[in-house]
Length: 391
Image (cartoon, rainbow, N blue to C red; front, side, top):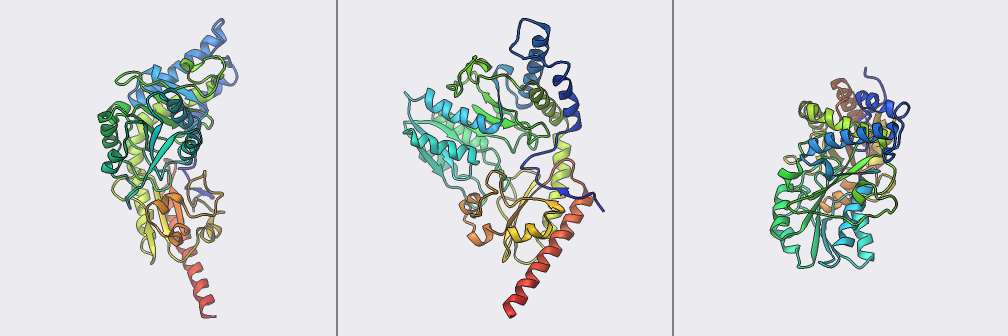
């Protein structure tokens, strides 16, 4: 019997790796200095720690240290990238291309851009959640200044054809921004090999602390700049003012260092557990996996249970198993998932989905327990519905 409750919502957030916590602790107490205090040893120690973390993150994504800009998280990084490009490149154009299945941090920022007089094209996706490259190229206009496409979807885990997108962006001299939050630490991400010009990522999705993220900003081929969205002090090369979260940054760097060494074996083990879970659940009648089977992250399985609502399913086991019915950012909504609707999935099936997302602390024993619990809950609910129908 595994220890309960079981956590299978790693796409929402991950627990801090104990090694990350250990690395952070001194920067709350002994080394508590402000990294911008350059006149004494406390500030020097903090600044040095920040630069070590910047090096760790740059090495993890194939970037230069000066290209890493620290933010409070990926939502801020998304805002800084999109609004920063829109403001700075206004003389060149006002058109942005994105997709219908982006994270809300990107979609809501694009809605803001539209209110500011910008034009946004929302590309549809195919049944597997991936965009059609020919449709992307057809959407480009002389006024297009940015293509913003997520690396991997947070609800269904599908991977976009990032390198093909980059090739189109390069061909038309358009900046390519990628929200890589879910991909980081799960699959290899290299900004040069992938051809990414701007990239948002965050620590708490890769076993680091909450409240710290980063924006990668390319310095050459092409050189990219963004207009700051917060004024005051000119920190982070003038792009993001504010006192740096030194303990968080140290933890972020340590998480990247660990992921660089352990990501591949972790991903292989997690994918096997995910497949075991998925294959067992698919034995149930009226059960479907949403999104791409071929192009996806190793840890996510989004499953619809026909004839049942996700809230009914969750009520049957959420005291023992922590899963979600979609993105953590939209979980308060009773509306069908906009991501699943974009795939052409019916409202009925969209309302019956459960997102299982595994992590490096997930065990075989836990997966076996979850399988048993979900199967029993589905059988119970369907039996109750059959009795109600007969009555």
